[in-house]
Length: 235
Image (cartoon, rainbow, N blue to C red):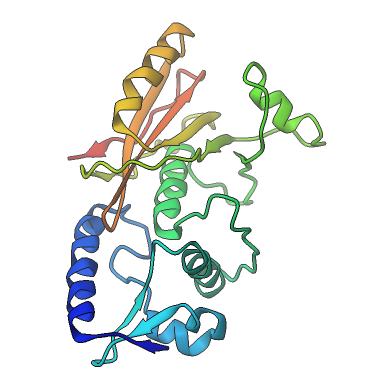
């Protein structure tokens, strides 16, 4: 671990506090809502992660979030530590931030609910497909093409600091929904997407916000099933 100056450490402490500003708006079931990752413990436990952190004179540990290799190692380490997953992330692909993506997944769970037999299946579109037949191209080589939901995380770069949490309402006796969802990087994109859904006569759609640190993203979900009741966002 590399030591940093006191001035740099103070700046980073201030930045960390600022970045935590939206954490109170994270999904209620997000494990990082009240317990942020302990970089010091992770650095002691995982040698590869230790190579990417800095230590100030007071012993505080910091990570450079703007350095892709460090961000990748943080993601790999959190997936191992908190979910028991071993993955390899190439640097030429989108590097997901685990707390924010967990917000997205928990929102989908709010929409479709849980099944005791763990039979819920979803697809995350991560491959390039033609614009006129997205789902067909993505699934044409798959034997089992029955999915409960679809999620998408396209590349985006803008942040808008607005926040609200998500409730977890679901009727136990309603039919299992089939929903399509996507994460959106700009709030200004939502009206265009909604207009496109209306053009295609999509009966029901809903939006939400994903908050983590200083990062703000938006989610949009739609379905052809009129019996679906989307969870309500709480302001």
